[in-house]
Image (cartoon, rainbow, N blue to C red; front, side):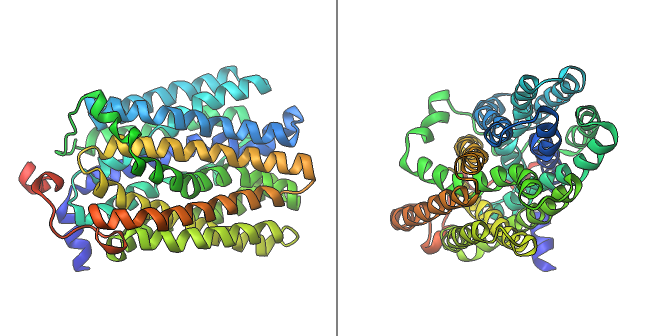
Length: 417
């Protein structure tokens, strides 16, 4: 209880709440085509490869839009950037409701849904901007738990699509965005950790080894989360012949686990270090992915394994973004956007790998094997690069250093009001 009170007093919790809702609703919109994939694929009689590509388009588009939004946020403010983005999302969803009627239209709509996927770096930086270094992991974990928006999509989109038609879900989703827009406009305050730098300074992390090391690890943790979360409704529907609504409910169990554990991953990393936490979760992810591929005959076992796998992904996301503000204390938003962009691009690999695996071999197994091998490769890389990290900008295990300069600590909310 004392820790909770200290945390709430250390920053501006209404801004953190607004950031969570912003990211949560944007995430739901981002994975909307994945949640409705069984309906869309049935309407247009798609092949496994076409299904995988269709599901991957919003992921790839959202990844490419993250960095530009992160840069824009440095010039107009993170709160204003979030409001602009949500306005564009509403317009995109209205387009989907009125004009989408073919497979090509679905692909175009996937690009527009990518606008929602750009929210990541801005949401985390806005939500954690009022908090000092010792609480960064927890604050980012709470804001980042907005990836629970996947739960909203897979839980509500299938029954709504069954009752009203899947195109109508786009129109209904447009109305839901009004809630996070209102909360952001009325409750959020721009944090004092303003990152005014030149464009060259903003993009500097693109040319650093650490930036790419973070990004590649995020390909597994976040790319795995978004890629599998988008594909699981199709996987459950095709593999186990459950109903479209049941496929969404089973997906919800896994994604809810990943979203909830993200907060735990951030808080745990504050205590034992992000490197230590990432080491454990990458190992768990690799093992559970391989077992998911081997357990394709049991719905119960597969669901439980997916829940374990997504818990590892969620904790890994929280752990990695406990490290980001330690490495880039003055350009967290842009660094986070760049890392998120590459990580989400990796997420686009997963639906395509799964679709190609089924189409070429008649089984999803080799798709799972490919993702598990990637996780093991990133685990090996982490253990190598962490030696230098803990000698330069982090304590042993990836904890925050006790001696941080005043420039690295945000102004306390009470002092900045």
